[in-house]
Image (cartoon, rainbow, N blue to C red):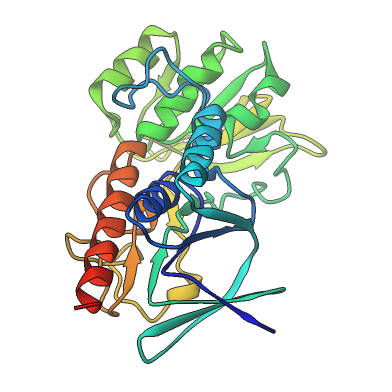
Length: 307
């Protein structure tokens, strides 16, 4: 298998990865992006991207990411749809293997993101795809004018509840605490949209034979259990960082990769950006910032290596 050589390889084609590719290519680095599904990431699930600075009127996540991919390619980055099977480093060079090809580069950027965390509730696995979903944009239209429960209390849960409220007037959101963790503006918009909050509660089970029929909730303060009918359960209770390729790296208590302010990990030449990285705030705009910073640092290192 012949090895293709690049200056900068990015694994992951979400906003962090594509921004990093764009800045690296624009900085003169021969750049490759590898992703098993092509441009997208979690942003594909956003129906209305309303808080990205300078992008107005509102766009949907799919259009935003297609534009990012085209922009990165316009600067010279190459995007390949491939699943990375392994990463190795010998000397100053990283070797990245896929099923069909091998690539080599002195600088490697991990932008593999995170996936939705499952509840682990009884019935969740059995009814996945039958009323249990982790993507409102993907599955919400199937439950137009139906009874919907959203599980979670952060920005994602509240934002998805807002979207679902455009499809149904009967949307409730269940949160284990007595107030939401999401930004106040998002919570205010959600409540104004008519989404009904259910505080201090957790899901004990999701019930149904061939499809979701009801959920059983437990009040965390009183212990009382209540079963309520519903047609769909949308779960947004956090993310799991995708770090399988770089398990050796130092991580925080939640499993996110630790970096410095230049997005560098403890391994020289290896960067981590976006939702896979340890940080306090995860948004599209912060992911893009991470990617740009990593690429800028790689360009600096490449320049210094020539002196």
